[in-house]
Length: 327
Image 1 (cartoon, one colour):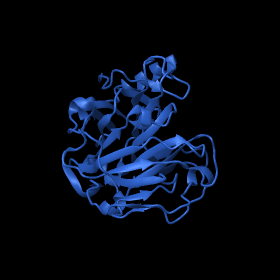
Image 2 (cartoon, helix red, strand yellow):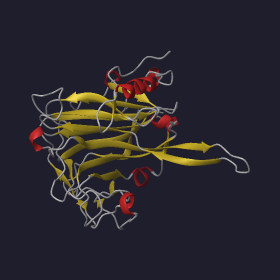
Image 3 (tube, helix red, strand yellow):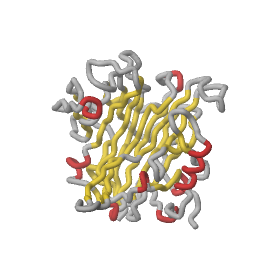
């Protein structure tokens, strides 16, 4: 029987923790499906020459093309979408682009020698021109298809690494919930069983594993009464549920990574600081939604806020985000 690769895993949902759900999450993570020995550290192998961005070009800029897309909410794709001057970043047609994307000096403690990073913030995260008073999100996608030429099969063991700055808690949107996401666009092949006089169907199934940063304002988390705090959440387990990762109690840089191995698993890594990831930084290895990952298509960032017309999201800064192949 395989070991659990993340002993503190918990199932998280909007209403809090369910004791039965915790046991269910542990069952999925600690099953023989896990195979910790197959995990590959993100950043292993060769970095793709055009597979990322370091934001060092002083002419780097992002062009908004408003109104932005909101296909997920009202089926409206509004073209052309936003894009960066180097064509590496583009608006998500599904949810739209953050309202503020710009090159900025990296906050203190970042990658040595770095002169540029990318700031993302959003205000109107749902349907343009409307206020939903619900939590919404905008996405900024890395244009891997343009830069690389297509998806990468997991036989090449692709991985992706980014660095994200966790701002001081007084600068956060004062709302409990997810605020930032570092995610991957991957796909599998899904076959539905046939029925009488109806053959089964095989189709490509996209899904989006990732690492979120969740925030608790002061007084909202009974376990940490002395102040605000944040936590990494991993999506997801075999049912797609989020799992608790390390708690964040002070501002600073974090390094996040995901790798995708030939056995169809997704491996999540993280540590405080900007040093290289190592095997000790493994948070968990899973098959999200019980899918076998077959292809890595891209990575992207979620910026999340309360879509009430006046609450700006937490300011998120990322630096040096790159794709690698180990084989």
